[in-house]
Image (cartoon, rainbow over all chains, first blue to last red; front, side, top):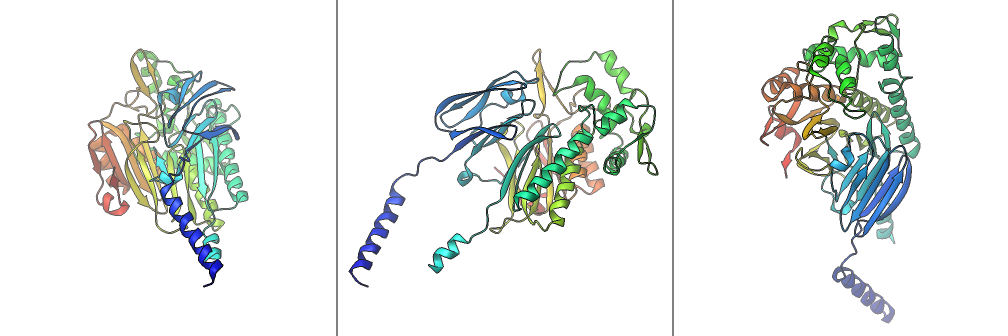
Length: 114
Length: 316
């Protein structure tokens, strides 16, 4: 092992230790789809309101780690009644919108039935 | 370098898709090419176009509009309606596609209203699967005047079976398909081990589950009163109607989970068991040889024999 190898090994060890010590930024992503189109994708950890005007109006609220349909003009308001989610997905079928939280690294199940 | 290549050549990620069909959200995460997933989406949309009673140009609407006469339908639709009638007989009407006359009157997911009791009693006269006539030679279906069919309690399961068959024919061996909460596990994870499915907590939100099931090559179908419900004047109305009363079911169950290799069977039977309640429902499941896990309104959970051993259930 020459001097360059020693330096390289040293750098790799330091980088590895830093990776363990520095907290990884939370990667939870909210994706909002209207039909086939992605109309928003961004962090779950923020305060933001997304409005969608289509067959029915949807107001989607992201609030520091959770997301919900805050208001909708669809019949039944099942989407609004579903409340906040911080994983998985929630949808407004009449408006053809779906809100998905991607946090695969934390997911304990591959899918939810029901 | 060899190590790097090994790391980079790991299993290809599953392709995912989301679409709206059969009145619900349909998602797939399957280890298949984009072309195959696109074809499976076509199967889904084509089925929606044939089977939805809300679409005026569907085959089901043709049957409903032509009540009193035989109406020719495609082979696929004929087979589904034949199977629905068969299951209606097996469940003695607890699952009955002719309940559509009441589904339409309540229209829980559309233009909801509470029908009068007189109207419900009148409409109940038309809920009768024995009046559903089938002519295999001409692939035609006839309902009586006043009847109306709704395949909502079986169509998702049936189409799911079609999609699974399509994938198997095309040598796709791993993935999860979810048609509005009706899940099918195709094979095992490419990285090894079984897929795990959460069973939705009927008292929680859409991403909360009370138990997990690990399995392969089977459908996991759940019926619950928490889906498709509306509130009016302080009272909750849900979408599972009781064929005996014409009102949303008031059985002692809040969630019915069926595990079966036959997704259509699981779909229809989960509805029938929900309506029948825990005692009769568990008896029906045992008679039909399907595996069931039922949650009662007091949160107790009951199972058919050996359910836990077969499916590695884990209460969370």
